[in-house]
Length: 367
Ligand SMILES: *Cc1c(COP(=O)(O)O)cnc(C)c1O
Image (cartoon, rainbow, N blue to C red):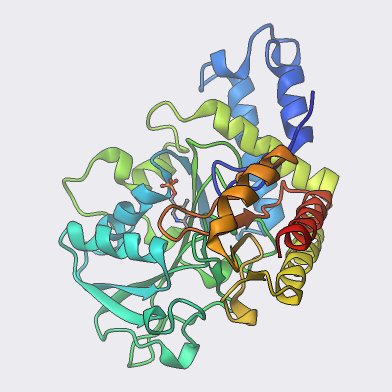
């Protein structure tokens, strides 16, 4: 069996050690004679799995006690709707930082639902090559919260700071962050946020699970008349088990949290590894005339590295040859073209090194 290096943006690589553990436990979970997939979500075995996953995540991110952790479905995209449904019932506008395709989708969903939207800053004028600076951000007087995308998975644009969310009168509003493609890449000060959400399939686990970390005071604010499954308060009260949760994805996410703690040594260690992988790749891109990445140095994503070849007629050869070399899923998003190497937690340093070797060799042969 060969496991290739997988640079997919999502669903993305999972740690081999996690998959091996899941395989060992697949048919007979810890001597219970059945698979986790076949258990009741209310069974003591599954409740223990669920509680351990939450406890490990809380430890990894040092999540304060006044935050709830929800294990949901619907993807990050459903959060584009659930956030305004829960946070705007008292009036006010949803404020956004527009930094690329994912931010744009979040904005579009709030508008589609008829909520008032205010664009607090946008990097559209600079081609999403750098994030708005703090002094460029202007919230509306009636802002109910500020939403931003920590890491634009398609554009490869990442915030290098946590924005302050203040109305013109200086009062603070909750900061809401889509962290789908950067959560767990390094330590985080959760207390700066009102709400964090992330689809699991980038840096947490398999598709089908969505993580929400929400401050207590933002619960119980949902408008009446929305489905129970969209109401953070109802979900929190039921321990994310209003209905059947995605049990196997939850279990696998728990194994990823254990891997981060025990095999990697926590998020400081993970951040150091991620920094080395990304720096090596950007250095190789910058050193060559053959590859290019347009993002301002301070805002280059460590998780998603888009790059173009000097001659796009070579794209097809690059993709075919890289795949033959065991370097999978380097094609850029269909909306932007070019290449993209996602270097999530589960992509080892050896994978980044193998990619750089391949790129150097390809440029030498075709340059
Ligand atoms: C992948 C992604 C999404 C969409 O996630 P789904 O789980 O497919 O809805 C949203 N935001 C960001 C930043 C992403 O990377």
